[in-house]
Amino acid sequence: MLFKACKLLIPRPTFEKRTFFGALNAIFNSVSTDRIKQVGPDRACAEWLMRNGAHIRWLGQEDFVAHYNSLPLDPEEHGSYHIEEIFARDATISHHGFPHLRGCNYIKRISLIRCAYLTDRCIEQLTNVHGSLLDVDIRDCQELTKNGLLKLGEINLENLRSIRIGSMLEPTELDDVVLSLQKRLPKVSVELMAEEQN
Image (cartoon, rainbow, N blue to C red):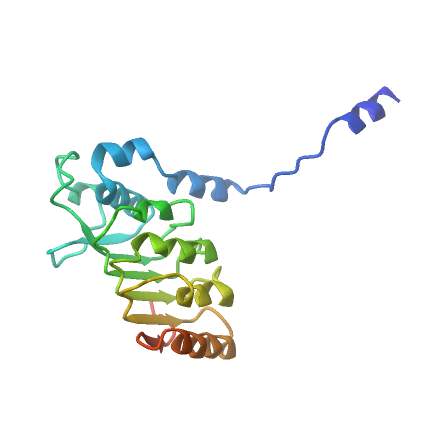
């Protein structure tokens, strides 16, 4: 009887159960304001992206870098290195880490391909690079919904010139997204891409 009474007093957990990998992903995507202050937004953002399997290209350089060894040797040298392009294929970036984009004012192109943790909340956070972003390529990110893709036409990406999307939704839904974005963003080239190959 006492056991039953105790059970009634213990509140049921109201938080969502997390898988081990979900919790690990949140850790690898967490934002450290101290780190951003220490090394600057571009370096901190590059570290986040590389930690999660993405590649970056520095402003004025031709090659992508994907490893910490390719970062500037002096972490306090924040004036010289700015991210111009992000290429994330099979990367584990998630909405937890997208605030890293804040303060990265030179990002012109972002490619997000087969990113398993990419959700609608990530698309909303592209406003962090609203002034510089020119091109977006999003393909085969299965957690994205039609509503998430339509947000590309709602957030204020003032200099956007092209959107490429593909392989996430049913073909009719993707067609609807393309048509809706074309109407909403008449100055932006919106293209439906073929399925991404390995």
